[in-house]
Image (cartoon, rainbow, N blue to C red; front, side):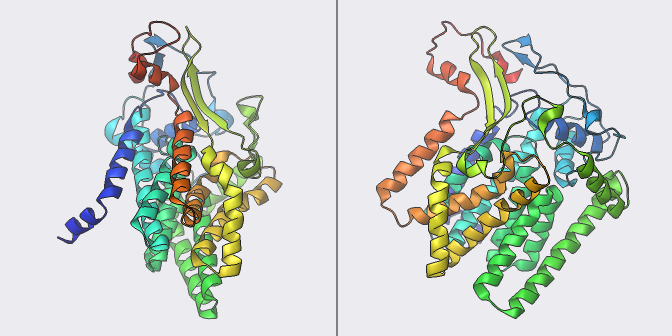
Amino acid sequence: MALRNILREHRLAIIFLAVFLVLDLFLLAVPSFPVFDEIIYIPVAYNMMRLTPQPLQPTILGAPITVGAAFNLTRYYPYRPLGVDYNVEQPPLAKFIIGVSLYAFSPNVTSYLWARVPSVIMSIIALISMYGIGLVLFKSKRWALLSMVFLNFDTLFWVHSRIALPDIYQLAFMMVGILLYLKNHKCVSMGFFALSILSKLTGIFGLVAVIIYDVVTRRSKKVIASNMLYAGLCFALTFIGYAVLVQFFGMSQNPVTNFFYYVKWVKGASWTFALVTSNPPVSQPWNWLFNQQPVRYAWIFDPTTSYPIISIWGQLNPALIFFTIPVLFWTGYMMVTERDTTATLLFIWFMATWLPYFGLSLFGQEQFIHHFLSTVPCLSLAIVNWLRTQHRVFTVGFTVFLLLGWFMAYPYPFLWLYLSGVSPFGPLPPLNFLFG
């Protein structure tokens, strides 16, 4: 009965989640070749499961295609014994989850569909957490729902919810941790922060954000001491989880030795795309706000018309980019002058997930816009927090602007020609590229 009441109370959010799920699953197998770093993570996931599947030849419009020059993983990873996680620069958890999906549903043939399905599930977890955080902060289902809508239709979040990269895992676990922390389930939240770190090391930024927020808002030595204990619990759980994972999949079964493989890799790695292309994308932290440099994840053109069939870009929704700086200043102002706890959390969340990349840049590490993914939810929440002070017409206008931004960046523009039945190129070939 209690579950039925909860479902009834939040039925509109459930309907929206169902729509988002359908949008994510639609054309999930397209493209039938790696998108961005899937070229690394999917082979790693198969390797961890001791599988060596045969890749399929991608086809477009019924004809085999070449998607680009062969990428030699040995240039990054010279030692790749079967059964281990040779991708030492990221923790194993996300790759393990991808591997389990592949082992269960496609062990013999390389499947981009089943590698991506867990990412869809993680995106739904992130959206549910977003709704929960909105309820805690705004005490309103309407504003919590709008926060969830804004996050889903951010281009960067939407793309990462459909590709097999660890970023969406790190974000989903981090957001569950933040929600539980705000609801005062702090011990349990440490477990989810540990899962976030085990998916990608930058998951630690979420832990830093909530600890700083708690210390700043409560201002007590006891709070500092208790949060140090919570952080210690998180690191202990992270170490235990890491030790278990490397016992099965590590280059070394000793977790300390395995971690130092990461340190060695960092020192010897080239942090640009020079190994792949002569034109590395410039996407440093300051560009994410002031001069966004999108990164092309995947693209392919109709050979007869040169029209882009698939065009996937790593970029933020322009509606978020245009409003980030003014809303950030407003949030900081509310934090300082009004001591508003919601503004304080969002400002600290932003800084904790953005500023560290400036430090990493000092060491010559090439940054990419997907590193900004952990910051996108707090941007959405901050904009909603600001919209609560504006006229309803403005809120509707911004929402339309955001939806248009998502629509313009939709990665299957050729599909709309088929759906509309209107083509400037004359009769269109059969729609067989969808499942190629």
